[in-house]
Length: 124
Image 1 (cartoon, rainbow, N blue to C red):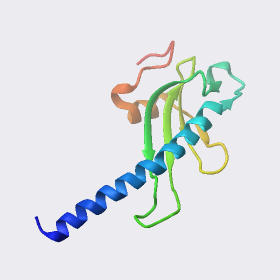
Image 2 (image 1 turned 180 degrees about the vertical axis):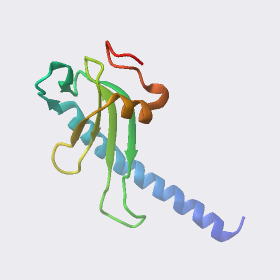
Image 3 (image 1 turned 90 degrees about the vertical axis):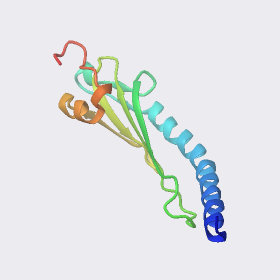
């Protein structure tokens, strides 16, 4: 293996180590945002509490914008259901509380594919 290839491998390992160090605290902060998220919808079946939600899938983006960048850019997306089986998507935010949005069943089915289970009392 040439010296350039070895150097590239070493550089890659250094970058991965940096990513892991940065992701830990960012992920913990994003997860805390999710757990604190609540919606007080007028219809009880659309009420959401992060602490009572069932997480279906998590997706991470980030944590750094460029190899030499010192600015972190991290987003945790969580697909979850509330106690009524309704689907929601949460996206963390580097500032503020993150965003929560209800997902229509057809959207949830398309996004989650095999992880999709119809809400309680709904047809498939």
